Image (tube, rainbow, N blue to C red; front, side, top):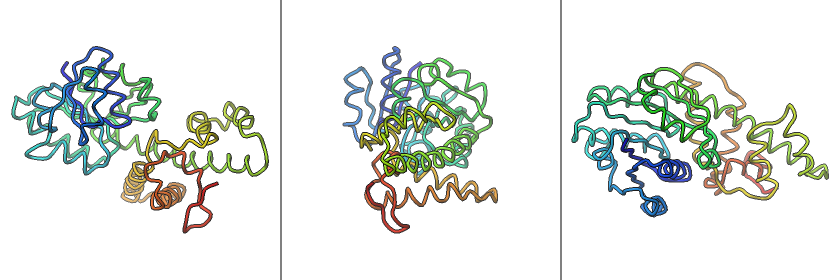
Length: 298
């Protein structure tokens, strides 16, 4: 299978590297070519637009930043993936968006793709940079089960837990569940570690005790040590998490569902983003806020 990939950042780049190592031919595009240089050195082929990627491939994966980016790379009538498929015979081709995006956009892409004989899946992931590098991501897939099964070999390379969730948009809705859980958990992780430090405890010893008990979580085990080491480099950027929480709250509002914890988390992360931490990892919530107005380092 000739695989196309659009978006070679922290997550996408690591996933393409795994596909190349497994022997797949990959054609890649990124807005900044420099981000793909290591992949090109490993054997990936460069294309100069999403349309050119699609013209050369059977299936195209997208892993970009925001819903507007997804819309641009897939649906743009001149340079988008669907246009590229049309140029080379669309029947049987597949497009898989792995960006965390709006469920409504996933449905639009599914419908637009179906009109030209292309199958579409929304397949957002969880597991961060570590999961992308190690192939242990959780992948949540919406679309048709038939298309989902066609990519079984690819799922095996990229993820550890791969679940078909239902119709188009169901993968994105499941990712919103994931992000809501992370939002609440990260507040607990950061507040708990700040408490341990303020109490004068040995924070490494505290972490060893609580991480394997009832309070344990992926965020505590993987991001807790980074926090204690003062490492706020991004496995997942705050500006992208703010985007996700906004989508989750928009969807909740449409369902007349009140999510006060998620609302608070969004406000705290927006404050960090506004103060210049948008490109830090989500664990930078530990830097905290001393008021509702301005963040301050612990």
